[in-house]
Length: 256
Image (cartoon, rainbow, N blue to C red):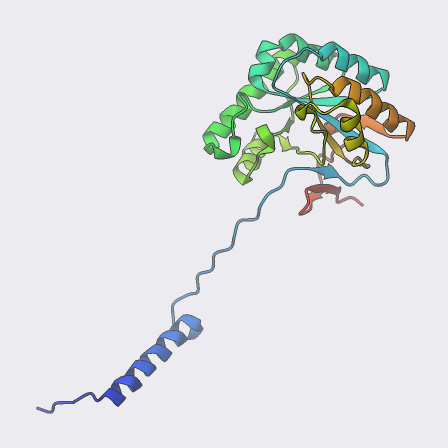
């Protein structure tokens, strides 16, 4: 029987050959298929709309606190021929159903802001669906109209949130002009902040039940009207089909 002794030099040679064979195998030289992981595309809500051809912008409110300024807001909006979208929390809609009805009866849009205002991007898909569905049902009972727009509490979203909303017939809307009125800025600070940022296709964010918001709106809506802007509800400004949303969240029509 022959005995083969493996020298140190031979060991290096065999090791090198083995490594080369493995490299060839995983680089396509063998029968094992390559496995690639494609990252899931990040979905974005609508932040603003490409409406450069028309002086139009959307006014939106998040409603989750009190309703102390309902009548005043309706009066200011009517004075300047402005329409708004109120994103209401389901619990708020139940508590202040008369205000929800007043806004709707005045021609303003009522939209979905979840049922209990949770950190929605931390929830399971089933819980997200429940939050959106329950709020939508409460709104529909009061207004007799199913809402079609959704905004996550705290402005939070992820792919699961957007896809859950889409499955229920909602488009998710953010904003590109934040009034920061909830910080109780003065009416001058709020109006300067908004007017320096608003442009055709902008979505403005305000809150009801905030001290200086109605007075700031007087300044903002007068200036916008004088400048030839139409202030409308979000659904009257966004595109509802045949559109794209770019990496900044700007929605554009594909018909152009």
